[in-house]
Amino acid sequence: MPAHWILKTEPSTYAFSDLRREGTARWDGITNAQALIHLRVVARGDQILVYHSGAEKALVGRGTIARAAYPDPAAGDPKLVAVDVRAGDPLPHRVTLAEIKADPAFREFALVRNSRLSVVPVPPALFGRLLALAGVR
Image (cartoon, rainbow, N blue to C red):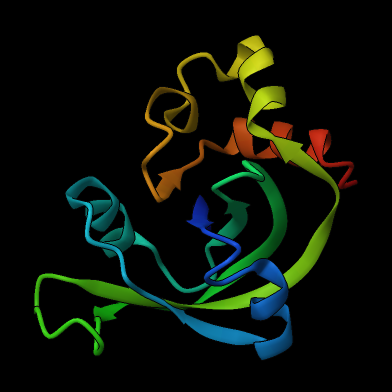
């Protein structure tokens, strides 16, 4: 069964629209130890939600993992890994961090408790709830 993840990006550096244009891209540059732990267990076929950090602070699109973790070729450090991500559709409704925080179901969610984490595992029930908030049927 595929796992579910939120991958965060600063839209001024690499936006979901860039991923849509490219179709598939390497998701790299992760250096946070906890985010790397999560990234190492990401598997091909896992579902993702792309989150724009910075001023937007919102879930904006969907996708899948096209290739599981491998050494980040841009890093020059064997401890750092990357994954390949395949773009899916934009979300019908962007889901802001404020909306997520306002929902009691997300009180213990890692995105709420550690908003700086760039790779966030999403339990299946919460993934479904996020899709519902985004208007995905």
